[in-house]
Image (cartoon, rainbow, N blue to C red; front, side):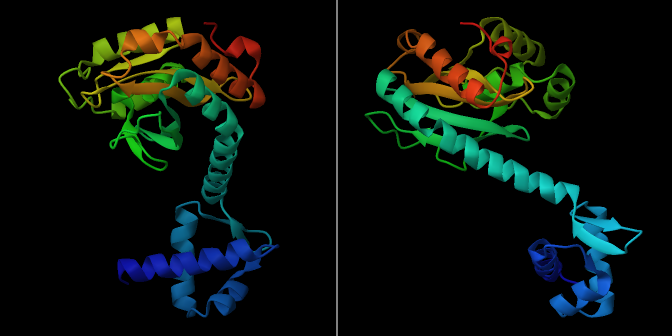
Length: 258
């Protein structure tokens, strides 16, 4: 079976399973998809193996699996987070005159959920849905620094410290030391490490239970606002991320003090 055919059949089967308000039997799935028995069994087996579908062995029915549900929850939470932060990010942009970005972790990348241009747009500014390598951007460092140690260590094993500019930190020990500094100060700095013209600051956002869920950055081209100029807005950045963390249910003690 060709890859495109497998993907199409899997998508069609998931549409049927997810659209049902109750778990479905094998026969119902076969009937509603119109697939042959052998194809239904083959596709369903793959979806089960990937935890996209769950099987109730007692009732012999199928329903959305934990991995699929996790994707759905993450998508909804990301949308809620971007909407919840919208007014706060607009205000932060107006106060600082800088570019603003809200990002979440996505593997070894920072995924941008919301971005706001400064008064002077920059053609290479990240857009919603785009990604930056965690080691090269302030939001990435802010999130990495405040992850649970075991999760942070696992991610650091996967991250390739690629040289993006002459200022990128490519030594593993130096990068770990940088993350320790971020934990102590509560703020991450990017000094021309992803793009030669760009500097920025970021602070973490925490959710219920104290886990880091996102980060917010203020950044600009160095000729418009250098790091010293951006650091003058450190309190505004902390106020914004602390407010957003509180709205997400984080305990005050989980939010690093400025």
